[in-house]
Amino acid sequence: MEEIRIQNISKDFDGFLAVDGVDLTIRSGELFSFLGPSGCGKTTLLRMIAGFETPQRGNIFIGDEDITDLPPYKRPVNTIFQNYSLFPHMTVWDNVAFGLKIRKVPLPEIQSRVSEMLQLVKMEDQSAKYPAQMSGGQKQRVAIARALINKPKVLLLDEPLAALDLKLRQHMLIELMNIHDAVGITFIYVTHDQGEAMSISDRVAVMDKGKVVQAGPPDDIYERPASIFSAYFIGETNLITGQVIGIEDEYIQLRCNMGDGEFFEIDSTFHFRPEVGQQLTVSLRPEKIAISRNKPRIQDDINVLKGSIEDILYLGSHTQYIVTVGKLKFRVFSQHKRVYFDDTALDWDEEVWLFWHDTDSWLIDEMPDEAAYASESMVHPPRFGKREQSRNIAEEQ
Image (cartoon, rainbow, N blue to C red; front, side, top):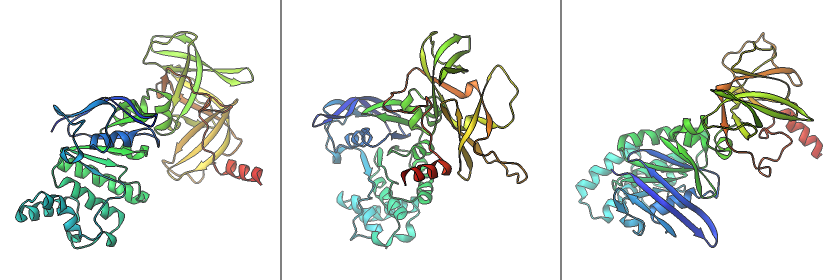
């Protein structure tokens, strides 16, 4: 197996730059994902690897072979689409065997390899069924078996689970990872679902407006976003802007405006050399913030703020609180580790303390686009809970 090298690839559709100068190396045998919103260029990039689109500029290599101008049928890749593309008049067995029959492989070998593939995707007892008789998950397994039977070097998956319900999608993610481990070839996966990409991938490329804005292991992108877009698109976050007023050996002090002339200061570790007076953004994940009605013990490496609960949303595994600090709104996740029925739950309008370790925030050398993050708050606008939803409905009526 060989690595895939994408060198300065660009693609233009009637003046719209869908892919803009992408340089990327996908390692041999890894499960790699392109992640981004609709229109970011991820599917176009996948289609160029498959040969369904031709780049205006750049080259694509699999190992030492330049495949940029090769037609799809000459490339050592196979593609699985969202709609499965199974032949409705053929049985499962015939669908999987189709590629081998076209290549005129001897019947005994076809029988052996089809049986092997159906066993791999756990569909050996469904071989006589037609696509119309199967569930979405079963159709997807057949599509995977059909794509793998010709032994491609690369399997391309274009949002393959988008048509499935949540539970089945979660189950199929595990199946895909098991199949990848079993066959050992390179999988390239396109999705707009952050959860899918985070759970299944060895590495992820986050795309926006035709560019790869960050690539790396999922935990690295989540914990150490390279840009405001990465921080905002991967999971949930609070974006806090401020001005550097002090720099120590391991952390900086940021002065943040709460509105109406009020300020507070936070400490954050840093991975680049900031300057005093510089405007920066801190990404702070909601689950990193502790919330309590009791003031915590003051420590040098702990940031502490006092605020008021504006909204509460119960989400099963955790509760989301929207806490107002001045004109800022913080989203806080409190996990339900245990249930104490005798405890008094936090309530709307209650004054609370928020606190987090300074190493739990991540500094970004960027300021939010005011058009993209329009709000009175410098924190990214939260998703509101039942109380705010009811209030909005009442106002509309």
